Amino acid sequence: MNARTLGALVILVLCLMLPVCASGEEVLDLSLFAGGEPPAAEEWAEAVFDTRPWYEREDGTDWRFQDDGSVIVTISATGDVTIGGDRRKSGKNVFDKQLELEPSGLNFPFENTRSIFEEDDMTLVNFEGTLTTTKSATKNSFSFAAPPEYVQVLTSGSVEAVSLENNHVMDHGKAGYEDTCAALHGAGILYSGHLGSAIYTTETGVDIGMLSYQTFNGNYANIYESIEDDIKMLRDAGCELVIVSYHWGAEKDYVPNERQVPLGRTTIDAGADLVIGHHSHRINPIEEYKGRYICYSLGNFSFAGNTRPDDMDTYIFQQRFRVYPDGVVENEGFRIIPCSISSQERVNDFKPTPAAEEHAAQIVDRLKELNKKFEKNFKKLGVTAVGSYPTAWTTAY
Image (cartoon, rainbow, N blue to C red):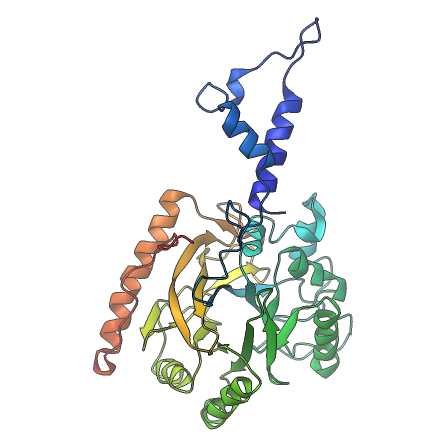
């Protein structure tokens, strides 16, 4: 359901709430309206009946198809999504306990961000966990599993693709990994990881290639050796856009380390259009390199690994690309949507929620401060963080 449809339903509910007098005539309760006055008739009609798709102009045309033959593509990306819990422990895990409280069932984790993801061409998240019922488990300090049917968390949230390469994807061994892949495939969600790349074709016909890597256990050398060929393979397959996801860095770091920055830049040099990072569970600054963006960490998103994390700030990264018929790609800008990983202030309910205005401004200010530390740490490399963190699109179509 898009935002306009939701607005229409809200107005309809308000209409049904109007009290009725003895004569059967509706009595308008002005307290229902913020300003004490109902909307003008033409505004009311628009609110009720304007159910156009997010990409449709008033004249019915699709603004994603531009007059010069190019196509505008909007990508959304988030950090870690972890659902379920550790099956080795007795009793219900914290995710299932929260699930019992939620009227919307498995739709609850993304119910406050669904409308955002519905208004893009592709949403990509890092899925950190497994979808399996297998009893086997590795010796990880933390181990995550959810039944395969919990894939509904992603489908109901308008998620089209996941990065499936991280330090928890093998929590339940080969069997758990295969179950996870099968659940995602059965739900129509594309995934990339150590088994290979993925190609998502947008509604407008643009092919987006995706690669995912984890850098642990000495894997940096392997990535450097393969990244150029891996990206070329996707280009040869006809991909106009290539997005590379990295599970890298150290937990709780707010800026990338000396190994991440060279790899991120090498990935852009090898032909990637966008680099998305995660693992630190903390937001990191964004570097602008050769006109492209490296998001070093998007933090947590819907994260059932901790009910009371000491930092619940996160953000959704969105970028628009202009893709020309000859394959040339231009950066059409980005924005962030500052969020909390919870809809509650003091406890994590695994329901990421866009931040209110004051909190959003604080998150933007934090990122600007992180920019300074980031640029200071890598002054010799001439690192340049993005100049600003816009929270709204600067170009209207």
